[in-house]
Image (tube, rainbow, N blue to C red):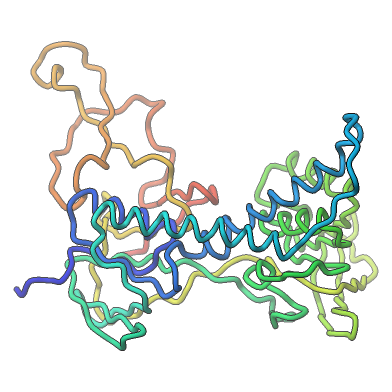
Length: 380
């Protein structure tokens, strides 16, 4: 068999891709990471968690300064320079992107490739970059293509009045009023952010409560806090129409009454609308063969980790050396799976871990630390 260009090619450099690339480099593999964006880091760094948290920090400082009078500190009323806030956000993002590139170099990730990756064979990846197309060979391929915002069918994002989460992070103005569709984590963040910046905010959620995947007590407490900040919250509200007007957008909303009975239709008018209905996974390369993936789950099925890596490596257990030699305690100890290459064979131990240390994840799943959800491994 001909020598491959790389041991592992990773398509995508988000939290799944770059962490895997660094770890593979630490284990001595020859690794390439393919990224279509100009800089490494993926959605989380450039269009998600990091820029949002940078703006939320600005908003928190603004709110804190507004409330210092009750502590006996007299200052002039603060004003927001939204352009400078975005400048700081970009500096934070760029610094982190440079940090990822530095880690790639430190741990000898030899291929840092800008372009779009596509599978063209069981061990071949075609990269379409600024220098044209080229085909790279590899032993293993990891697909970490991430996700993109999903449109609401009746109100497709146009980047001007109807904005998705990518658009709103580039919005260098503060609209007089804004309606946020979707009251999950992303929607409530944007609602809080623009309320601090001075917009009149309406938060619209189709389900009966905000943060619907969290505990009911958390949802109720957060809703009280949002209403106290004069954010209008509409739950059990389904968007039925979106009409652009000279002043902004007019939304038609159907609401459910307390007993589940329909309430009179409502109309919401706003200067801008932000859609946060969720995300869909990016289109993945299609192939007529079973492509190689790395690493593999214990059951032999390939797994896909979504969004955020767990803060610690997956752990396996083995009996201590003293117990294997017939001496000492029979208690088990942990051994990190990250200390051994996933490509090398490992002798399995029959020792059973303590009940408190067993993984709560179902077999064949990968837990997402950032989203507190699990992704079922693809079927074989």
